[in-house]
Length: 142
Image (tube, rainbow, N blue to C red):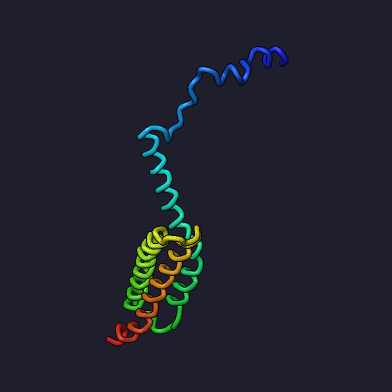
C-alpha cells in the first residue's frame, strides 16, 4: 500500500501545467443539458403539489360521487363521472398555471410556486364541484 502512495504524483506537480478537467456546463451543449435538467426539475416540482393534494381530491370526489345516494341512474353516473374528470383536468391545468405564475413572482420565497399551484388547483376543483352540485338537480330533473 505504501508503494502505491509513493507512485502517485504530488499535488503540486498535478496542478502545474495541467488544464482543469472539462466540466459539462462549460460548453454550449452542456449548458443546454443543464437547462433541460432544470426544466425537468421545475416540472417535477409543479406535479409534486398535485401529488400532495391528490388524497384530498379523492376524498372530495368520492363524497361527491356517493351523496346523495338516490336516484342512482345511468344519467347521474354519466353526469358525475364527467364532472369528476373535468374537475381533475381543470385542476391540473390551473395547477400548472399557478406554478408558472409563482415562479415569475419577484421576491417570493422558494416554496411559493408550490403553494400557489395548490391554491389554483384546489380552487378549480372546488369550483367545478360546486357548479356541478348546483346543476345536478336540473340535469336529473329533465
